Image (cartoon, rainbow, N blue to C red; front, side, top):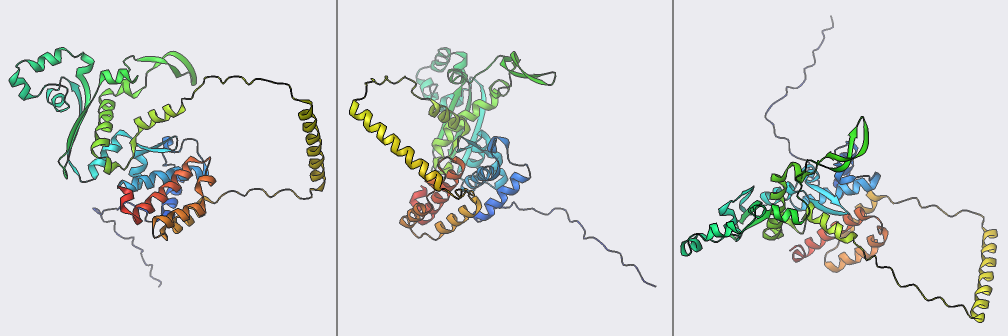
Length: 364
């Protein structure tokens, strides 16, 4: 008799720890970016309408930018957005990066009205010593402020290595002055009605400043506070609010019409020379057209993965800043990606990381 052997599957053991996948080379970063994009995990705010290698480049930039700040790939994708080709951190992402730096003694945020201690720490109200010298000075200062000035989001933080501390307020008055505060439940905009997207003068207000003011105001305060106190940790990365403001400012252009040129009739000599030159150009063009026998070779496109891998390998072989510049000149990303912001940003990031490695002062 043939005995049947029962196949037993391995027992599943609970309590194991699954480590995050952290890429160590550019090739691994590119592969992870492709997997994220193919799996549909890339945030819409990050890739937008980009497709193909352009979308992969945007994801790779976010992963590499997060790696410089100590964020794992998937955390970086949730924390970063790209605005006009510039990587930016969401409000909670900014706070998360600073908390993970190991240089924070405390970091607190909040929202409220007439928070005396916080307003004193920010220098808005007289200190307790001033109150002892001039009793009633705190209440006098409060009475001179409007309700919007007394209602604020705040961020208070202190460094554990240097002992520096800072408290920043972002008041309702600040938000109104910046055009951010919204207290109307409706506003003109598009709304879905009967399965169709139509314009409605009284569409529901879905602005985060209307729905979540207690979250938005502290995030604004945290952006100002943490960029000043932990500039070395953030490495020049801005929060999304500031990047959007910078982007909007860059879109402003001088629309003053230029002075019309004074039209003068051409001289007979110039007109005759122009006619002769025009006839010569037409004759040469006709000759070249008749002699053409084969169409020009079409551009087959750029293999982004291969290009960036070769650039990264060449940069790793550069021993000093001069060698880095030689590699940069040889590959010439500025000309190659003149109209491709995401790819240019990725090339800049590879160069900056190598400069930091060969000369630590470049990363300070």
